[in-house]
Length: 380
Image (cartoon, rainbow, N blue to C red; front, side):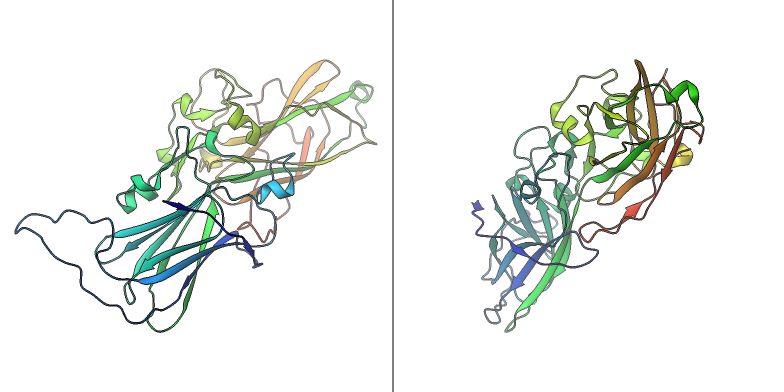
């Protein structure tokens, strides 16, 4: 029961990501009791749609200023795309609910009762196909909605999935405006600049350093729309993760995931006089594994922190520089900036106990009007 969108309004507000604006124009006091047909000692069958005349609720999607998503190579115009979205309004007293959905940004009219309290949920850029396909008509409860599982392969840099909620009480005889803040289900990991400085190391100074690839490893494949997984909930089964221990180690490539977790087509020579200035941004679902629980091992595998891996060759020798990203939470930026490589990396992307003289990383706070803020990213 979709409705075509008619436009996107833009607004700017610091420290907020993207917003759904709910405008509730009053149509007079329209109070009517729900009909009751319960059989004694037996629960009443749940009602999905309201049985009464309601106030009209118009939902208008608007986007704040700043970046929407930033997968490497995606145009600014494509980053602002909203493919589809839906709004659900659950009556906090009866449990009844209604929903409306649309194939693009634009107004969504919805009727709600004046004076009643509702919890409204917004789900944005959900997939219609694939393992995480979402059909608004399939929802029967708040648990169905908040517990819905999203899959990393269904994410795209041009339309990242988002979710949010807000309490709404329509007021009779007056207009009520309510803002729903929706947050991306993913975290963003940035590499902002890279230098190579082999000065004082004659065995490396004459060699050619070529940046081959940058990517994330040990990324969790799923998350729930309504809440992040906790660390104990993360599976230790290897198939529940992607790029476990390296790029496609022990698993088939999945193009839908590769585009957001890595770039393997860089092949750029970097020297002391020619730093690498291109910025890269990648996405992963939250991985709450704390640094204290991280495991570095290549023979057997279990849950661990996500890594940002720099893959390079020194002449014909392939080396890796792994940067640990612990306690990743959704809708936050984890940025590694002013990275300087001083020596030879490891032989395996899982080895992170590199001598500090090998790689230097400066962490800078990321203040972005469109994301909640920055997280720590560092070497151990």
